[in-house]
Length: 417
Image (cartoon, rainbow, N blue to C red; front, side, top):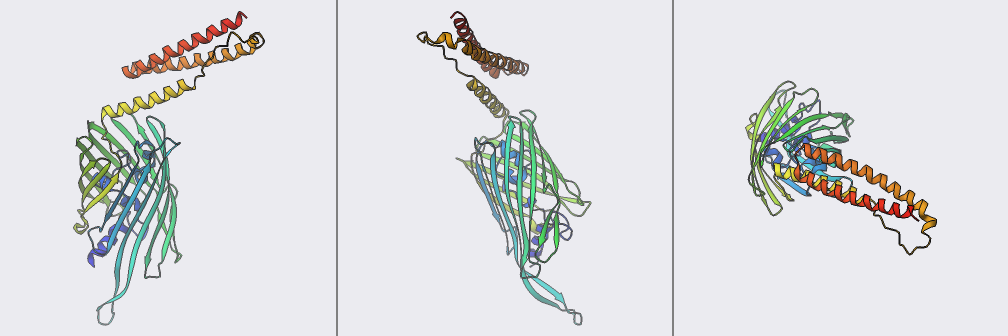
């Protein structure tokens, strides 16, 4: 029974005093990969965990993925279930959904008799907490993304008069790829002050949690992450993680550091480690969480994820950036109107020569503006010494100039009619 109380304290105490504020369920909403990396995820993980960690990362996700985790949380009569998924698409934005359910069961209320001092067992009750999140993210450029998420909270006790509570919240986040090695992220969870309204009339506040994170590609296949989070009446917390892919697309090793508040001014540091295996789009993740404050809460976690994972490398990051630039340029070229030369057998050419010339001259102005944009991009590519992109831009400039010459030729033909 002591273990049950320890787990209940863990669930309710992760956000600080449960009497003053509700549980920070977002601390629980992580898969084994994020857990092994010290609960980081604001800037370093572009997978299904982004649904909870940072909705802006949903917009950067290249592959669809779904992951789940189930654990007894190292105690009897308790469970912990987590599932999240992302759908990557060519639509306006990528979408993701996530569900978290945690509970402790068959908890006994005891009392002490005033006369004899005997401990008398009382009623038995259960505790549960649930979180549902719908997130969306859009990449506005190859290097910048914004996202938002809607939260639905449900928490309660059965077998008591306390009842249950419900509430809603909003998350917003951003992600900025400064260069192929360095990425910054920020997220505000429960943007406005969210309240859980209990059926008994009591109101519990779920305060806003702010997070800032950074991810750095140390070398090919190794990424380091650092985050800080803060909320009112609690100390600032630090989270660190390191992930290494020694064998590309197959095995990963992870280490992490996760701080948890002890009081309104102090925190204690826990340590994490884990390993991951990726086989044909199926990912097995393992994490060990060492709780330095309550040893009974140290636990092993396993999660399963479906979806291809690609290790971040300098080469891969540059390739993605080049591909996105090429898609933008190709779209602009496709939007350039095709010019059809007037057929010589059309006798009515003289009648339509003047309006036709006006149309062609308008197209000529658009092509001139487009050539100017291409030359500006070529200048930037040369400054970055990006020879591959510069070569493609030169080819596009040459093709566009040929189209311009064709339009000019048609204008001369119409002028001679």
